[in-house]
Image 1 (tube, rainbow, N blue to C red):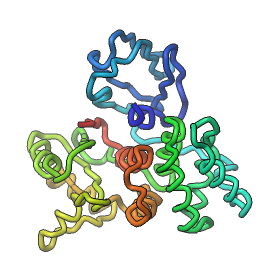
Image 2 (cartoon, rainbow, N blue to C red):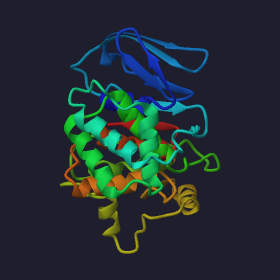
Image 3 (cartoon, rainbow, N blue to C red):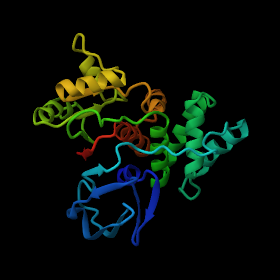
Image 4 (tube, rainbow, N blue to C red):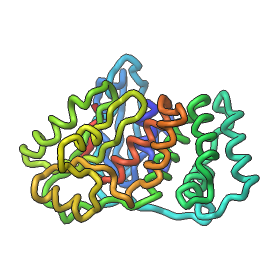
Length: 290
């Protein structure tokens, strides 16, 4: 449920009768009926989604795929998110999360965007970010905070525009297990079926071996490609399994590395934001969560 909320929220929250959902800007969401004991889905004229119903807690996989109608994600900017935080601002931000044991005083969207934006520009040190990551790991985040972290990471760089790559683009993410038993086999199979698979993967984190690390064990296999190389491979083979380009979600790379050495890997909000910022930045037409 945390992943659903963080994934779906991008620009505006949508409050629903029995719980709070959010939505991707200009998106259509497909929800399997097995996920709810009763469910009504309304697709509104302004491209928003209204879901009414009670959630079936025993079901698996409450979210399967989405299709965006717009070719890229809009990146609104605000004056506050571009403001340079003072030392006292940073201390207050860190203290707020450290003391928020019960989730009763969460960060607002703008403060999270401001903090991550300042970190990406070098105004916040690694040790300050590490302190915040540890507080998140211990105290957790609300779904709204997780969504704001995800959006801020996406907005730290560019969003891929694959409109000049012929074919329907699709990606997947498996949320459990160790061993890369799905991606390395599934991606070329899907490409052979005629779809385009722009897959951005991660490196080893904690006890898990990264997909990219395994691929780089093949002599000559490169995963650090720029956007043009990424698109050229998609056009010629239909599949590319790469590290996010330097200008796509760049702040995630730095936070990813910090989490690996600060014992903050096992945090659902941080895992969710890291996963989904890469998937949203690569901008596929469809996404499957396994």
